[in-house]
Length: 341
Image 1 (cartoon, one colour):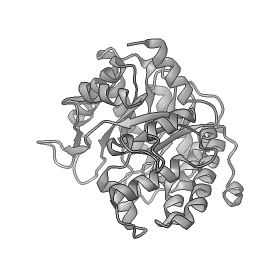
Image 2 (spheres, helix red, strand yellow):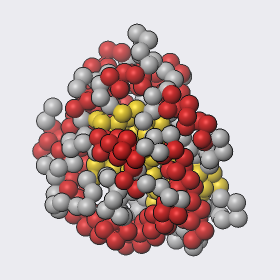
Image 3 (cartoon, rainbow, N blue to C red):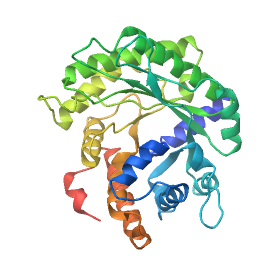
Image 4 (spheres, rainbow, N blue to C red):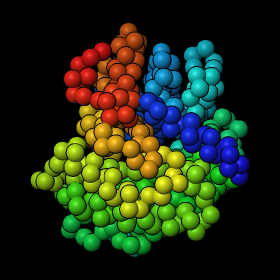
């Protein structure tokens, strides 16, 4: 690995005022999103939609990296410019989702293990040639009350997979985004989320250390510490911020160059408010930013609805949401900004 290259890439992705656009939806996920706006999910409709996002004027002022899906990194604009090349020309780092999805963990009811390690070294080399500068692997940890999960084995199995993935990325000078997601699904309160998140992150960093992963050359993409969607004990941004930062200060090494939160099912505004509350607390050991998918794209899809005549308005909706999250990255966001265009 080239440690200097890894550090520089990670630090550039964490530029002040910028975050990551997660545009790496699988075919099944983007079909669900297109279904909500009555657009057929085809290779061409997906290409047109991603081109709309990537060609938004001024995107490079707000977005430092874009996570692509395998199909997307092989696609190009209508004029024939490869998406990875288009992004790189704008100073945006192209990234790639490399896991094969979360599957049932044999012997452990209700729990998942992320697959995709087989052949990963070869695939990473190919993606590097296609222009990817960083990668992403998502692990899924579920909390349930009716059965005792997550189990220690599930957490550790996913942590080891994340560590093996990260080491393989660094072999080819690609920054690994390490994404252990404790799901919002369920009726658990914020205290339960904090305990499970702390245990998960501790296992992940133990595994990264054992795998000899260079921490200064990774980025962390975790969940926020938040109540489950069905919990009767919902809390506000300040409580989310204090619980999240308190948890992370206990288990996330200061060597990590940055934390890019996932939205994890939060509404676009909720994800922005919570990120802002964390940054409004003051300086932390790591810069805190965003790596949002649906929380950036939901207003875009609602505006676009598959119609070319709505493309400009959809791009404006995307840039507006990105600007709000850019403001939240420095703790300057306010709800009044939601109405400003």
